[in-house]
Image 1 (cartoon, rainbow, N blue to C red):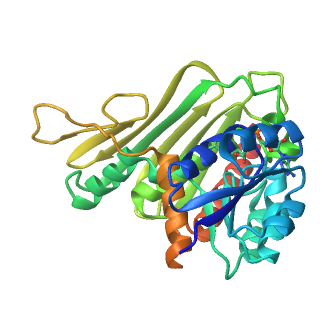
Image 2 (cartoon, rainbow, N blue to C red; image 1 turned 90 degrees about the vertical axis):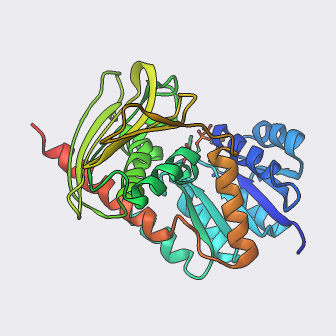
Image 3 (tube, helix red, strand yellow; image 1 turned 120 degrees about the horizontal axis):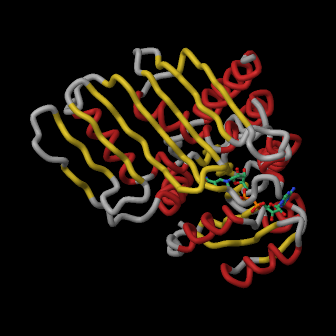
Length: 321
Ligand SMILES: NC(=O)c1ccc[n+]([C@@H]2O[C@H](COP(=O)([O-])OP(=O)(O)OC[C@H]3O[C@@H](n4cnc5c(N)ncnc54)[C@H](O)[C@@H]3O)[C@@H](O)[C@H]2O)c1
């Protein structure tokens, strides 16, 4: 098979992770073009990763007819760019959040019917998370009871970028970061979220929330407490899984990405991972879906399910006094 020709749309921060990941699979794919409304942004990426630079996504799609695109623009532009790719039958790896709201996500899924669409919920490919899923499935943790998650850091782009302009982003940390938390909770429980309570706050002088906590329950009764903040200076990225026979901790910053302790264990068992990171694994999976015509691990329905929870979370937060 010829190399898969990739277009990258949006050449900012996360595009760097996509380009680095495709470069790790340079035996199977090549960067055909990179489009960004800021010419220098596209040109700088082209200088490093190859291809041609464009300032307009549709012009690039018509000029190069790539097999696949990574959509790495702010959320407001996900839907129009997906529609342009869909109209040309081009496979899409679309960054999270899928879009600014559920209605736009539904439009994305409808437009891509019959064409490969993978939402970039990259944590599904985080090796310690995959190992935790296997541990849960092995039954060693017993029945899942609770999951705690915290993604927190001091976000320098809060208040200084599109991330805090709701018209572009769709909201604040709830839609930006808790989409990951919700996807992780669904992946670990293997169930849908049926109950959502949310509270949000803003410490910064911005119009969107910069801290948010979700209390959720899955259809099989697992409780999740998902807490994220952009204003707390000590970075944390942790998922704790509690079952009736043991518990596991996925700590993104620890040398041992996963550790667990079962009911009769005296000590924690630690697992280290030297596999490629989640972005490289995500690109590998996307390329494999193109090569084999197979369905993606993160399905369009997953994007819809996550955005349904986000929508209920915003409704719940609005109901708080
Ligand atoms: N998976 C993750 O962990 C992760 C991390 C960061 C960001 N993201 C997501 O990736 C997307 C981009 O975030 P970012 O941090 O890279 O933002 P960014 O601001 O660093 O980069 C976005 C780029 O898109 C360009 N752009 C805007 N509109 C465009 C258009 N219509 N056509 C072409 N280019 C356009 C901008 O000029 C900018 O260079 C967002 O959806 C964000 O939520 C995901």
